[in-house]
Amino acid sequence: MFAEGQWQMIKAMLERQGWSQSQLELMRQQLRQGWPLSIAKQNVSALIGYCPIRSRALA
Image 1: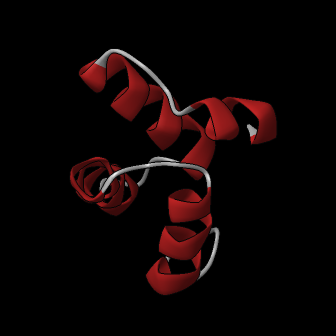
Image 2: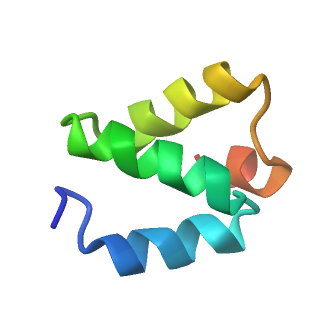
């Protein structure tokens, strides 16, 4: 359970936004470290060099 809810709900939302499975695993690691979802998205985007287009519209 994270501040934003259960992982399965967060994962489903991120999948709809276009995040890949490898990116989702990075995101989960960020959340486990205590980062809020918005910062976790920024961190993963910086690590991989881009952000899914649908995710940018909903950030």
